[in-house]
Image (cartoon, rainbow, N blue to C red; front, side, top):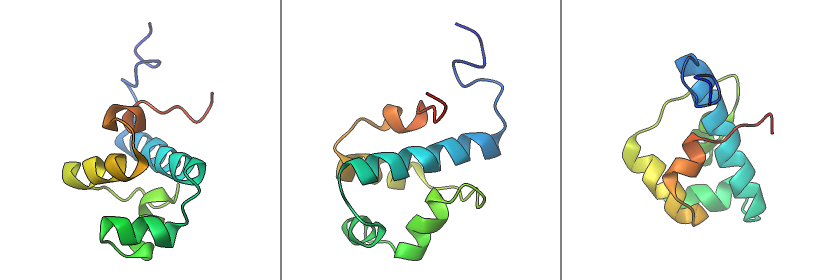
Length: 86
């Protein structure tokens, strides 16, 4: 597997953009609105929106990543390895 396929060689902004896409994708699959998910995470809808927005590149803590994965009922690595081009 090439370095690019494994996620290596991506700029941090690209990784954050892919992470935001992953969170949005899995949230929608669970049929949760941003407001509903934000409430479960104890963060504002605006904060979640900034994390999901592809042009914001808003970082998040590992703790919040784990909480998001718990709410979405999936393993955190799935959020990190998500490829929106598939």
